[in-house]
Structure formats: C-alpha cells, structure tokens
Image (cartoon, rainbow, N blue to C red; front, side):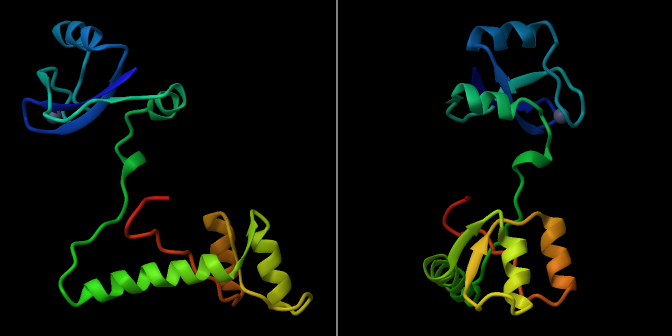
Length: 152
Ligand SMILES: [Zn+2]
C-alpha cells in the first residue's frame, strides 16, 4: 500500500491509499478517485513524498475520514512560547514523578481522593467519559495536554 497526498481541481487537499502508483493512475483515469469534499474526479498528486505503510498502518488508515488525523493547534506569539516550555516541563514532571497506573487510573484516582489508600501522584489512561465523571465528582484530575514536540 502507498499513500499519496492528492489535490483536486478545486484545490482541496486529501490523502488516500493505493495498491501502487500504477493503481493510482488507472483509478484516476477511470474516475474512481473522488475528492472527499467536492466529489471532483480531476485529481492529481500533490507534491509530497509518498509514505509506504506497514500493513497495520494501512489497515488503520483506510477510512478517508477528515477528522481522523486532526489535532488542535495554535500559532504562538513570543509570550506564549513560555507556556510551551512550561507544558513540556509540566509533562516531564508528571510522567517522571507519578506512578503509571495505566487503565486503572479512574479507579485509583477515586480511591486516593476518598482516602481509601495513601495519596500519591499517579497518571494513566481514562476514557473521556471517565475523566469528565472524575472532574464532576471533584477529583482533581487533568487531561494531560499533548507534548508540543511530538504527538503521542
Ligand atoms: Zn475538491
């Protein structure tokens, strides 16, 4: 599988997976490649190095959902650069000092909050629903902001 960055005649950019470069050419000529935004079939490769996917990646990337690879981003001015460094330092401290309790996070956080076990810093994974419930219960949790330097 090979991923191409594509451009439709109206300038919409999108990405799609193909068996090969030849398969891409054939499908475009046959009008099988549609722009997800305007359904145009005049599609060309955008200038971008193609990525060859491992099998697993190709499986995950199949749906052409627009939302799948979106993340919230902001352009920073000079003053905000300080916050960026702070987020990095904050994450580093959290992950170095707190126990990783993995998916038992919600359960552990509640136990600590209710004083059933001795307090200690923890981090882990929680569903958005669990995190929201904890916040509503007054448990001081924070969805950890993603690292400014990498997406993990
Ligand atoms: Zn389009």
